[in-house]
Length: 575
Ligand code: NA7
Image (cartoon, rainbow, N blue to C red; front, side, top):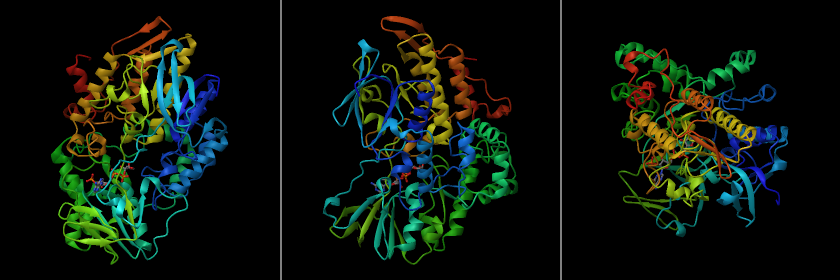
């Protein structure tokens, strides 16, 4: 590729594909590099049995083209991985995207070239490509953690990772199978593996909360309702905290609600299924007393589903408030422990000591397995970005810049790294939301930035350090006012040894975040420096575009829930 690109996009998941669509609209010369052999990102890699989306499919799909929306019909409320991958390929073919994607190609480095106002990007083929803009559409949960276990190299059976599942599937019929981990990937795959395995042994270090999906075909009346006005449906779900319609009750306070009313509301949401229970009460994510009410309700539901009280107790989370680790959405998870061919090992009481040639030895037991599944999670949010050797304008690397945890402006740009955009990066709402709505918001916004630069013949844009620090402080303080930091979660970087602890997402919600981004734009891109060569065209150091609190906010919630943003604004003299 001899000619310099306008935009080099890393990753052909939902972010990278939509970025390519938008770049073409602007007439930009753009190209995508993708490590996998196909499009789809998360849905390309995670092919484990039972893999499916945990946001409803009518929400979890692109909304940028009404025709695309109307021509695709999801088979289930929560689409399975093969269908999501088919959808990704449908989109790629419909917009003829693959001709501008290089597959099986990994980006290994990116170096800022000051003389050219652009990047030199190195591929694993050794080729170096010049590009004016780099868009890191690298995914939030795309790099598995490097978890390893003593003796694993001696094990003679087969090891599978949920996040790198064989493309032609795995037949566990009659086999003795072990699985390590009880996060979402394990909770989705355990019921399916148990159906065919001779015996399945689950190694659990920490139990998670999980809610039933009540999956099945999309009820016809829901689909007809959606069909009446998909635009309105989309607009409504985009302008919510989570980027999907979840029946939010912003003024209902659990600690002020009579117990029978709480129970009725939680039962209603449990019967509906999935994440609906996350929005039952406005104080549940911020007040420990309110959260305990919800945690106790879900714990009782776990006990109802598991026949053996000892197993039920082991499966009940006690170390973190409900919702502070991403809860799971399952189909038959807890009932699977009622099967004769499934057993649970509590690694807290019986720690894993080593793999052996034939299986796993714990402190008190040893197990023989034909296969072991590792469902041990991801180096979230920063993992994929930090695995690229990115060197910015001052010679600083991204790892150096993020030595104390990621710092970004709006989760979109990093000071010292001009013309480099992150899609759903750390410091944006990202993993706390429906990723597709967040992706579309980010990509649309990046496109606006590029169009604006082109309109004024500018060569580059960079977040200022002041704006980055203010935004990072807001992200930190917003998280600190919730219960999220109380969990040792991947949201906090706690699952990767040595990773700095910092809450990785903006807790203010996608709606507030979008308002902030729009205000930044309307103030002429505040917090950014825009330049051409040595000439500075625009220099707005401070970030001030904080929104007023929502109108319907109850006064006593001002320091709670969304009001934490308002509180931060007051503390910083910005209102
Ligand atoms: P998660 O949610 O990070 O789960 C990983 C699981 O693996 C979790 O139960 C961990 O226990 C366990 N784990 C990790 N390392 C070990 C070791 N060394 N020993 C025993 N157990 C271990 O990843 P998932 O892939 O399930 O889900 C990721 C997201 O994808 C999910 O939230 C959805 O958004 C979709 P721990 O809790 O650390 O004690």
